Image 1 (cartoon, rainbow, N blue to C red):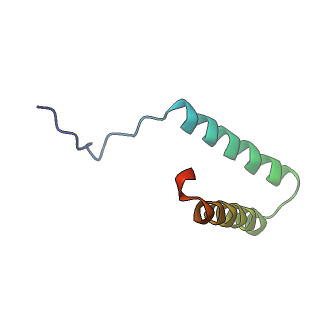
Image 2 (cartoon, rainbow, N blue to C red):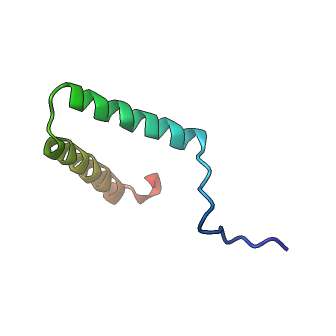
Length: 64
């Protein structure tokens, strides 16, 4: 029987969705940098996005 525990050295396989999300995040990050946003501003935008998602999840936990 094969163990379902992944070895620490194994990298997780990305799904198409994971890759798409990573590409989107990279594009947004580059766009913000190109527009002159400082690192602290990009962190602030990221925090605001997390706050928005958290608020939505609190309204409807089924969305998770």
